Amino acid sequence: MRSDRSTSAPLALKLAAAAGLLFLHLPILLIFVYAFTTEEKTYQWPPPGFTLRWLAVTWNRPDVWQALSLSVKVAALSTVIAIVLGTLCAAAVSRTRFFGRETISLLVILPIALPGIITGIALRSAFSLMEIPFSTWTIVLGHATFCVVVVYNNAVARFRRTSGSLIEASMDLGADGFQTFRHVVLPNIGTALLAGGMLAFALSFDEVIVTTFTAGQQQTVPIWMLEELVRPRQRPVTNVVAMIVVLVTALPILVSYYLTRDSDQIAGAGK
Amino acid sequence: MTAATITSPPANPAILPARGGILSSLSDLFWRRPKFLLLLMLLPPLLWLGIVYLGALLALLLQSFFSIDEFSGMINREFTLKTYSELLLPSNIDIILRTVTMAALVTVASAVIAFPIAYYAARYARGKWKALFYLGVMLPLWSSYLVKVYAWKLILAKEGILGWLLEKLHLTWLLDAWLSLPIVGGNSLSVSFTGTFIVFVYVWLPFMILPIQAALERVPVSLTEASGDLGASPGQTFRHVVFPLALPGIVAGSIFTFSLTLGDYIIPQIIGTSRLFIGQAVYAHQGTAGNIPLAAAFTVVPIVIMGFYLWAAKRMGAFDAL
Image (tube, rainbow over all chains, first blue to last red; front, side, top):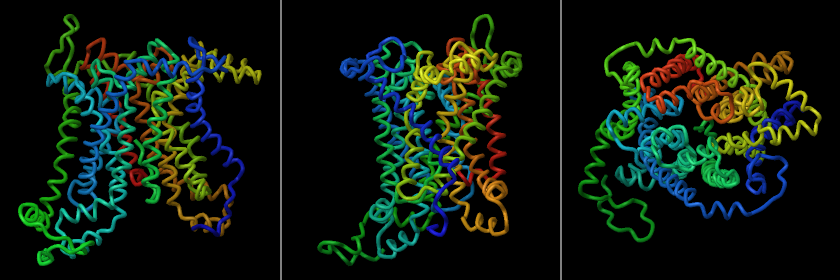
């Protein structure tokens, strides 16, 4: 603890930090207001009136439901794949030092570090070269690739904190490798994996750039929204869907924060 | 592995019963040959990333050396550098320069806005406030990209909240004057470069805050105290001690802001002018035009730029701040 230091910040710093945080949050809050506006054609502010009508209209739209179910399916599949691959990679990288270790971390980070459009068009041209038709699995293939890094980051941070002597102790006490994994390693990294999985789910649920290249004619929720942004059909429905998306993605983030809050700062665990 | 004598302890087994058979011998094998286990653990992720990702990247690179037949529109699968020479057409150079300039401006602006937030969160926020700051950055970072872009369309539209606010403040003339400027202006903010710039900064800002905060948290307080004891003013301490130590964090954050801006094609399409960015050019060439070779050549530009960027960042020690 740094108790010996004065804890008050200069006023200018406080103002700048507060202004920055407001800048980050106000636009998202605005979505919640627009979801209830009675105005149908323009983005008029302040809203002329408020109504709950659009919630019901959205509820009865089959295309919204289809997009939602595809998005959930893709996100769930990608998350499972990402958890398996990310954990394996993190375990290998953190427990041993070997030749090419740095390269592996780089390889995992690359799908996020390079612009998404490159991943997207690369996958698309690979699909077309190999004549693979678009399906749910082509979307999953792309999503899982960049979701690995999220799980990997969380798992590596947790492995770093988990002391190796625990594993040795378990072995000394007679547990074999699988028992050690089941009873010692897994309980230790479980919450980190869950948190990484949550973030992977949110990331996949929200992804649009790679998806436009790997989806063909299928519509996930972000593709549906993009379509509405480029060629608006019914703005109020878009507003409601936007609000739902904000709520759906906020939940896994809060849960994942709750799961990892006691661990050391996983800074830059970002996308 | 000698726990076989203990068969079934009643409630809470201190030592788990050893299993016989394949699992047990597998476990022994892993113990005796850690390299084998390592290989087994690395194989699935490496196969996945190697085949799906690197394979696709190579396929893309390969296509950039093909060319398109101008008459039939068919792809000619012969090695040629013709497609790359098309990149050097003035209109394409224009696109590349525009994108890189935008990426650089966005990076600088987000660093300036991010620094105070990161600094406050790292140095002053404690306990509940710290958690609040963390969530305050994480929630916007993870909330839907398209929703954020959409929110800005609502804000920047002519009849939107920003226009309304400026009208209430009697500042509409200022907005009009800005919009009448040549390059940055336009009919309304939502169809101008200014609008594109604001949205880019907004969307990538959290990616800048987190690494800077991580770098600042690592600066020991004793260093700033020592600097003060040695007679430096707070400004001098900041310039000569804190800022240089935070620099790797800024560079790490700039990797994200720069790379993400280089490749984005949705923000300039929804909020911006009709003049293209690299991402839009790639999208247009591979889609309606069917000119995959040129699209592939275009994607090589950000790859090369990011390659140099990452190399420079690594030299500055930015990867430790990730």
